[in-house]
Image 1 (spheres, rainbow, N blue to C red):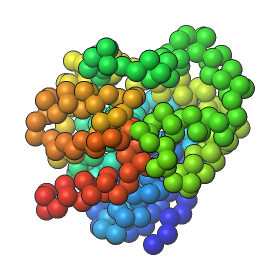
Image 2 (cartoon, rainbow, N blue to C red):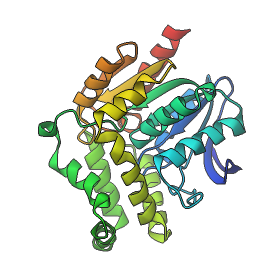
Image 3 (tube, rainbow, N blue to C red):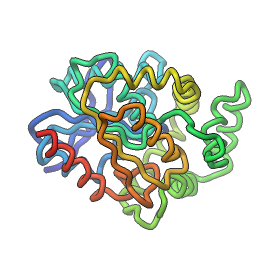
Image 4 (spheres, rainbow, N blue to C red):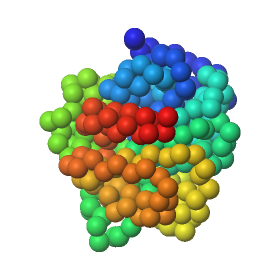
Length: 290
């Protein structure tokens, strides 16, 4: 079973990694500054029992901005269009910003989404005292009017793509030594690509600004997740420095009907850091629903 890249017409030209397989459709949704490559370690296993695809979102990876719009709302529409292209309904598996996009797609297009898997999803800050300063810096820079763009561009000038990838992977993992060389190589490919894309910084700023209203207002986020009717699995690393584990605990209290799995000693990207543990949780959840 092999993965290949293709371009589909889903409300615009969307680059997709197709992992093949047959059975219920799974659409994997990457996070901010990520790409479809983020699912390479788990896609082949999921494709043993499902039809699995992972799009590059609007303005990320190999997908140009569609309608000059890289917001989470526009990408929820992209996900819905991808589902229509392959024939849904689909199980959405979303990490970080992709988790929020999956929530939005499930709420807006309930007939297209059968189940939801949220992997360290973007969520409200439960306690500002628990926020890691480096996480605040990473998330807040794109929000600064006018200056944010300059700071992002200055950072790109100062650091090589290789060093930037190592820094990013160290930040999103609890133990970077767990990261396979193929993960680093894929991330470097995307980092080098984004240096050549004139819209990359604008896409980052647009996406970050569209996330902010959801993560800064608990009431709005709570109202949103209470609208989800699909069976939902929440997976969260206990050592996530970007989205603190307390956010997952808060979500589980809001939705006690959801299945929640905490991965001890794991960071923000379990599917890259501990793919086998991630897949064990997913397989057990699916078996319980059968």
